[in-house]
Length: 109
Length: 114
Image (cartoon, rainbow over all chains, first blue to last red; front, side):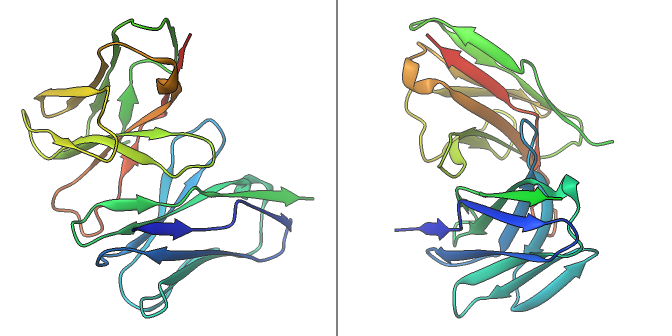
C-alpha cells in the first residue's frame, strides 16, 4: 500500500533550527510537497522536490532522497509564527497526492 | 491576489439533510479538488475534476457527489448527511500546466452533522 509517515508533534525553541522528517512509500514517484497549515487556516505551499538534493528558500529548506524514500523540511531561525502543522505529500505514478497526517510544530519562547 | 473561496466556513446540519458546499477559484485553473481533513489522518481526496463537466472519484467518494458546470466553480454535495461526515472540507485548485502542480486551498468548511 501507499503510505506517508511523519512525526505527530515536535517542539522547538524560538531562534533554533528544527528538522521535520517524512518517509514515503508510493507506487511510482513524481515529486514531494511540503505545505504549511496554521490552525484554522488553509494549507499553503512551501516546497516541491522531484530530484535528489536540497532546495533552499529563505529560512526554509527541503531535502529529498528518492533511493531512501525520505524527505525533510528544515526550518532555521525559528519564529513564533512558524508554529503550525507541516504536511508532507508525495505524488504517485498516477500523479495523485498521498498525504501524511501532518506534524504539529510548537515553538516556545 | 489569487483566491479559492468556499461559501461557508461553518455549517451545522441534521442527519439526512442535503448539504451543498460551494467552491470558487479566480485563477482560471483547470483542476479542482475536494478533500476532507480529520484529526490524525492525512488529507483524503473525495472527488476531483480536470475540466468543466468532468469529474473523477477520489479515495472516499461514497456518500458524496460533485458538480462542475463552470470552470471556476466546483460544488460538493452530500445527498443525505450522516454523522460520520462531520469533518473539515477543503477545496483546492491547481493549474494543469504548472510546473509543480501546487495546490491552492480554500479556507475550509467545517461541517457538523447532528
